Image (tube, rainbow, N blue to C red; front, side, top):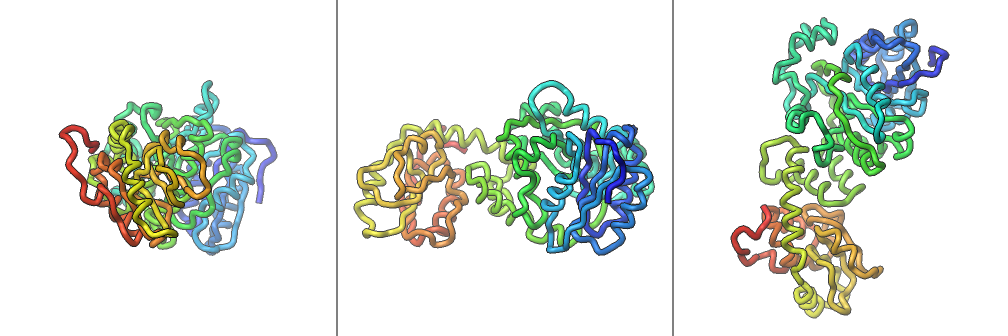
Length: 427
C-alpha cells in the first residue's frame, strides 16, 4: 500500500503487532502534525498482525501519506519490521515511533530541525512522557486515552511519575548529552531519529534480537562508532500511553538480549551492562546508564594502578605446572608473556597493554574485566586469575564466579588476595 506522490523530507516508521486501537491513536497524532502532510510519510511495519491493523491503516489514507509492510508472524521480529519499514521509506530522515506513542503537534518539525542544524551527524532522542519501563507510571487509564497529547502534557507533564524514564540522566547534564559517557545507552527506539544514510551505513537494527529490548541501544552503539553524536530534543516530545505489555514483547527478557549484545561487542562496558541485569553488581543510585557511568572511574583507576604490575612470574609458574595440552585461560594477563607460554585465552581490562602482546595464533586475546566472558561453560581446564585483578576487588566475587563457569580449576593470587595498601584499590 502506498498513498501520495511527492518525495517527503522525513519518514516515520511505526512497528506494530495486533494493537490496532493503539495504532489508531498514534496515526491520529501523526495526522495532527502542524507540518504539512506532503513533507512527511508514515510507514507502518506490521510484524504479522492478525487483527484489523491493515484496515486501521487504510482508514488514514485520506489524512496521511502512507506505506504499509506486512511480514509473516515468525515470532517477535520488531528489528526486522523496523528495517523493512526503513527500506520502504523515502525520506532523508528516519523517525522511529512505537505503537501507542502519541507525538506532539510539532514532533516531526522538531526532529527534522535537529538534523538540519550545522555540525556533526547526530542521532536524536525525543523526550517521551510516561515511558518508564523500569518503573511504570501508575495508570491514568481511560482519562488519558481520551485526551490529545497536548492536553495530557498540560495536565501531567510536570508530574514526577510521568517523566521520561531517562529524565534523571538528562537533568544531570542539563540535557547536553555531550557531557554523558555512553550516551548510546539512552537511544531508545520508541522515539528517535537518524538520517537514512547513517542508518543504512551501519546496517540498521540487528535482526538477531528476537525478543524485547536491546536492539535499539545496540544500534546506538554502532551509530556512535560511526561518528554520530547524540542529542536529546525536548521539542520532539511524545507521550507513551499506558497499555499492557504483551507476552511476546517480554519473552526472552533483557538479560538474554544483553548477553547477545556482549557476544556481538565483547568489551568491559558490555560486561557491566550484562552484570547489571544478571548478577546485580553493588547497587548504585542511578539507572542502568548511570550505573555504568559510575563504574568507569573505578576501571580507569584500576588501569592506572595495575599498569606496571608484572605478572610474568605468575604466568611462568602456570606454564611450568600445568600438564601439556591443558586448555588455559588467564584473567589479568598483562602485556608481557614468559617465553614458551602455551596456547591460551588471554583476558585483561587494559586495552593498551593487550595491543602490545605479540601476535600469536595460539593466543586468543580478549579485552575484558572477566565478569562475563564470551567463552562457553567448561571451556578450559585451568583459569589463572592474576594479581593484576586485585585493584578490581569490587568485582572479585563476580570474576571468580565467571572463572568457575568457564574452567574446571581456578587458581592465582586473586582467589585469596593479599590486602593492598589503603587507598590503592579501585572501588
